[in-house]
Length: 442
Image 1 (cartoon, rainbow, N blue to C red):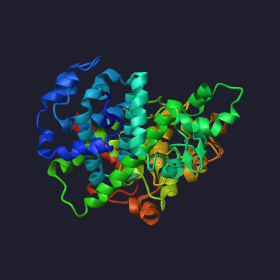
Image 2: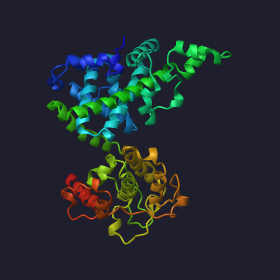
Image 3: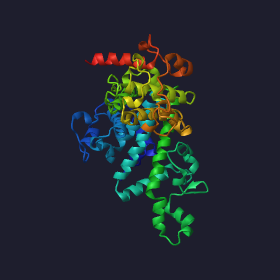
């Protein structure tokens, strides 16, 4: 029988596993049972020894790497992480989940890209694990999990209001009666049988409720509980000493997440363009200035608009396409002069800007979707919902804000480092730092 904690590590069963795991120093000790389960997982591909997590701490790190590859790697190979879908791993996986929650809570903000990556990955993992479980067993485990998360034998839609407001779940996906979500077959028959006299009630139940809706609710409720759990840990960490291994894991995750995501940014060099000397260059996020890195990681409501629309949009587009703009006499360049088919702009520049907008708190486009038009406008394509060559020139391709303006309008993003000395624009910082990094790599 599949264990509840394999799907919901925050269940009573999952919490009991954590309670019994008293010595956190074991997290970095070789775990023979874990290694054996990984090696003997059906369809597990082991191309080299590093794929096998030998400790629970490494299992936790690999879960994050899986999340990043799943989201960013176009050539993702599931067989590399097949062991994550091995139900026998439930105990070790539950422990890995909890130490990840703790490490993320002390290292990152609750609205950060890293925290959302982890929470969303847990939802994807739940969905994949359920899909691998045989049908009859899946029905049993789904019902058991629902019983575990029900309060007074029901789930009220208000329990999911935070999930609904975040658009992770829609009310029109649910059947609601007297504030309760209808999930059980008997409830459905009792409340809706009279409406389907000419249609097979069993089939209507499967269409309107069924396992798919149940799985969706389970996934979204666990996501919500995961976020609440991380919030509680963050609050507790202010008064409780965190174990050194958890602290170390948090610090490692900061570099791992950043580096792994960079590995899957498929940036490429564009054509030289009509001026000959204009040439798009590979984008190196490691050369970004502090204000740009802070913007990409997410901005709070006070400065979201200016940070994304005015600062990041112009910076990313010029850094990718025309980083030497301030050293050139060509001041009326258009994006199509370098990116003639707009493929770089569509496939690289806009996705990076939109991801940063989504990292904001709250996400920028959730309450201000018109800012997408302003981003298109700042790239020189007028006030339209997408970039199109026929609209280019309706507005100007804006150059990046100066450091002086950033300090004035977005002081919360300006956290100068040693490379900021003598710099008056984040693009100048980028060119200097990129030159240094390129020199060091040769």
